[in-house]
Amino acid sequence: MTTSLDYPDRDIRLIYLGGDSMFDGPYMEPRLFGDFSPTDDDPDPDVWPLEGYDPGHPADVDDLILWGNSFPAPHAAWVTEEYLQSVYGYNPRRQTLDVEELPPWEQSDTAKYEGTVDVVPGGAAGRQMRLTHDRRVALERLGRLWNGERVRGHHLLRDKLPSWTDLFGDLDQDDLKRLVIDPDHDYEFAEAFGDHPWYEQEASVYLAPKTILRKKVWYSPTLKGRTLINQHSAFPPLKGDPREGLPHRVAVGLATIRERHHGRDVETYCNLNGYTVDIVSRNPNGQLYAGEVLTSHHNWTLHRNTYRKLVDLHNQGIVPCAVFDTRETAYQIFNHWHNHEALSAELPNGAFGSEPNVSTGQKQIREAYEGATSWVVESWTTTSDLWSSTIGDPTTTIDPAVLFSTNW
Image 1 (cartoon, rainbow, N blue to C red):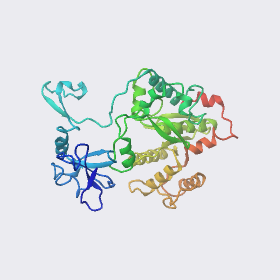
Image 2: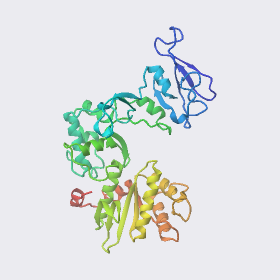
Image 3: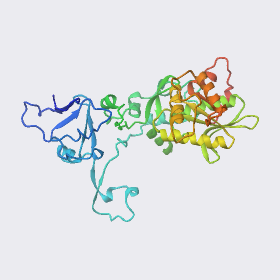
Image 4: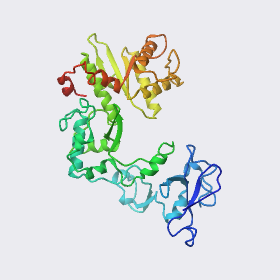
């Protein structure tokens, strides 16, 4: 049961748990509360922390802690450490440990091994996973698939991202659930508020769903999963950039197939003039091309740094190219490059006001490159376009030797 509080245009309520209802004796102090419809602009300093309900009031919003739950329905609150201390008898976000209990890399060289220290646990670490036989087999297969090997007769690119059943259908599915489900994560809360800018909680999982080539695959390794595979002796080290995920890996693979099919020499994740470049190719005339893969994320600083890298390579006589995970991503990044005052990236017709088909957009980008503007990206494509022009094109024959022997 809940009772609404008088906050205009907000849905902030007191929450009654079992034995703490309006009819079941004394209330818990301090009271449980939450906003059942928080806004993108939270935490609002005119609201949080709640005066009269949070014993830490007043407090700077930068010092508040997001505290949420999905019972009786998803809700969020921004509270002080004093509030958590009062409700739980201790701060569940802070643990007091003996100094000698800390791992060596967390201990100061000059620390005396006595006394205690407050430690705030990182929310992303999560519960550790036991590597059972079937989990170990699944991750070993995934490593080989990522590296371009055939797994149970299936190839990552040739078979257009084989299904979960294709790869792991013979294993204990209940045992594999831990790879994709975090038993401590509040999925209902995440579904309700995951698109809000203040939401930062992540499930501690090793594989996650991704849509690639218009297919939803359930085995894209997260950073946690890639780290486990790369650091465990039972698994093959993953080729490529350990910071990048499966959409990036697929794009690099398809671009490599296309370039080699066209008779170009190709290297991937190559050191070129002081930069690591995703795809570097050389045509028969000796012209070098530098290809960068860009996927959808909100690290705009990284996108701008990629453009600066391409500018520098362009100034050294290398032709810059780009591969995007989707057409939507391409136009978002093009417009960001064009609009950002710190970049000299002028599109002659201004920012894209729509998302034209790939061939139309490619023509406009080439015109910008060949024109009298500062634009340096010569050509671009998408993962889907690469697939359609290579393995997915029924009129194109890709030499199996090129496909299966390609080191990317």
